[in-house]
Amino acid sequence: MTNTEGKQIKYHLGYSNLTFELWMVLHKEDCNAHVEHRSLYLRNINSAFDEDFTELKTYKQEGNFKRILRKLTLNDVKEAIRRANRIMQRHEENGVRPHEYRGFKYIRENPSLTVHESVAMILQDCGLL
Image (cartoon, rainbow, N blue to C red; front, side, top):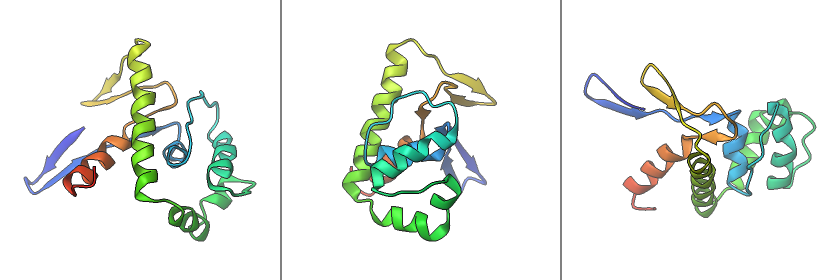
């Protein structure tokens, strides 16, 4: 979704279904399975980032999350975009159609996401993609 506010600010909305952890995992590994509860991503977070968190709230603590972010490279971000594109392409190939609510299109099935589209636009604008 693209919108303008006061003709000065342009923004693009991105989502990560079922949770933002999907986007984080995709920086390091594929994550294509349907997940019933967001806490189940913790196994993927631990595997992807060589960690041993026992709860999502521990992973989300500021110091821990910043440590995870320091493990990311530009190549990891590019890989996350590629992996996210594959997830969404599979939905399209399987006939999964987006729903629309107030001009915002989204796919209910998980995993699905669009946050990678906004990140890709930023990298393209910077000449990094």
